[in-house]
Amino acid sequence: MIKIAMVLMTVMLLIKCNDTKGQVPDNPIVSLSNVCSVIGGGIDDLQACFDNANPAGFDPLYNDPSGNFLSEFRNYQHIVAPNGWDISTSVFVASNDINLTAQAGIGFSPDGSKVYVQASGTGDMLTWLLNTPWDITSRNLPSVVIGDPTPKSYTYDIHITDSETVFYMGGVGSSVYQHTMTVAGDISASTHIYTFETNPAAPDVYNITGISLSPDEAKMFIKSNDGFIRSYTMSIPGDLSTATRDPNNISFTPSTDGVLAISPDGYHVIYDDAGILKQHTLLTPFDMGTINVPLDKTFNISTIVQPKGSYFRSDGLKYYINSWDNENIYEYDMQ
Image (cartoon, rainbow, N blue to C red; front, side):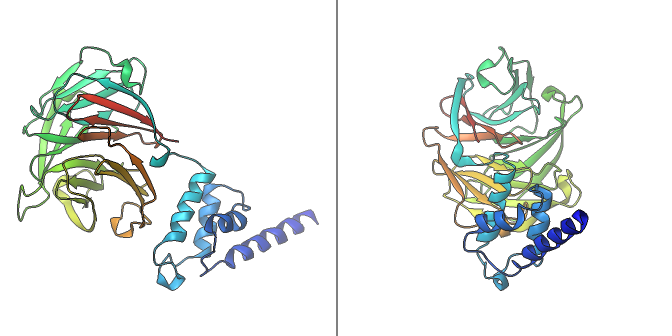
């Protein structure tokens, strides 16, 4: 009898979930909570319930052309399993003067024990060990590695893969430079392998100020001083020679500021616009054509003079921005 009752209860719950098909609740979070969280409460069960409630995806047929319901669902996922990536919860932690004029890109080793910083004017990349992982104030002096990647350029941002064997540079001009490190984490042992021109029809009409890649290196996003964030798909992940431009972009106030980050799951894009960090939800991972408007989150960073490079930790709980003018690296926490 107990087993039969449990089966009947499960069927009733699934029917309740099915009843949401084609409907956009007045209060999506409450509705999703009532309908889906009862089925175990886990993310996998929640996703299954959501897919069952709307198997065709969100489109005008479901009276949700703006994607608001799906955006609320993503937010609800974060309530069930909080994982950071909420720029509005930013809290300043510390700043550290690294005494490097015109610093640009910044990166970290996956364990937080090492920080990479690029000097824009020379193209050199410096590495410091951190005595306390992720604590920028515990920087061990002097720098332990100085790399001299070529071709040289006034570089504005870098992206270093978690394997610490490949890094990408962008700066003055619309080219992206890809390098490999024969010794993981050793910038001095780097080799330039490919230059990708993002705007072959009219090279150098804009400068690349921010660069971010998906964890599998299949997607690359660049921010440029002409006021656009563009994305590219590599048909062979990690092979820049196979990159092609995607059709959609995000626009912002043109500037040389360079903060840009894409969350590892592809649902969040963060960038700076006239002293404000802005965060959007992408309704389909890594697809800027599915951007949710209006903005989901914002945070004011106008006190940072000419923010250039940035690094957002993969768990979305910490990020760093460096300043072109005052030689500081700024550390923030997110919740």
